[in-house]
Length: 431
Image (tube, rainbow, N blue to C red; front, side, top):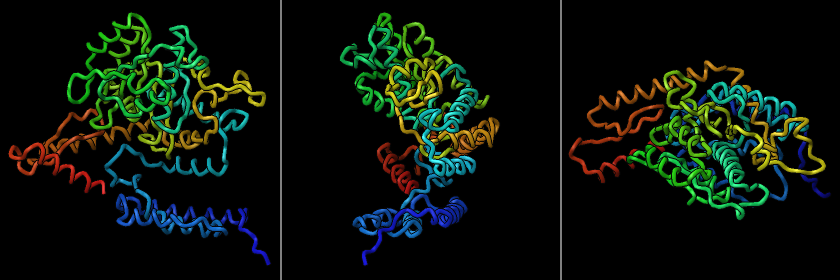
């Protein structure tokens, strides 16, 4: 008798949910004690590289294999022992809402496909504008992260520059437009370069003006470059929270220059924009409310699941010019909200459920208190470093990053040897 192929079986769902919930709970209960990476993580990951089976194993068996081998192959980056990239965890509310989003499997492109997902997106973005002190009239869009949020904001800036020169870039293309310069400081993040490459403007369109080794802005040099433009449009990128030392560009100064010299001001606030939530650090973000576009991540300090970011643009018409589509089967955005017409993704996961759940569950005060707790921890660590005879702090601590190095024999060790020692220590901690 011919063997029947194993197919998806709805009767497995209850057992699948129970298994995953039980194992997820066990993982989260032990996360604080787990090493960042299991010693055999690479071997565990490679063990999945087997021939494609002719017959499936069924949902429960596949998931048991994923749990038994896969958890060893992951990186426990949501836990408190992870000291590498800027990565958040997940709040209980966000985790539950994210599971619900997967269960409902909502297409959040527009109101016709999910009034729930779109309404929660619009409400969440309104709350976030209030949280960050942004202009309430800006249009928001949930992206996969700061990379695509930067892409979205800079795409709007490119369209604006084109219109200033009499060219509809979205319609006519870049070949009809003269090069648009992009000006920033040495604090700029690599995602801005990648965005410019994807937008066809090119990485070489960016010029950095730095006055020191940290990359802090040389405002006079920036102004001279803008003067040379003689009123022609350009783009300025201000950086709120550089990832190595937590430095901030002087956003207010850059906003003044943008207004004076006809430039689009884009603020990359991937994680640093959260400084605006506390009176202790809000001055670092002064001027962000004057920006033409602003980006920030959700899967960093907001602690919602990967992947999630936010893009805010002052003039939504520019987003429609770049990202709208036209087909008989598509709804009219003048009748109902169509978020897919305001950013790069047409097929969009309902990330808004986890964002709304976190904001609704914990409120504005929680975000502020969390940021201030981290500010306190950073200052505590900075004091410990300053009090140690073998540790040297290398930068100020404006936010939540403390840069320091180990010097076993202060004043007697060469820079090259210090680099070698500290590189070894860093690699060991990451491992």
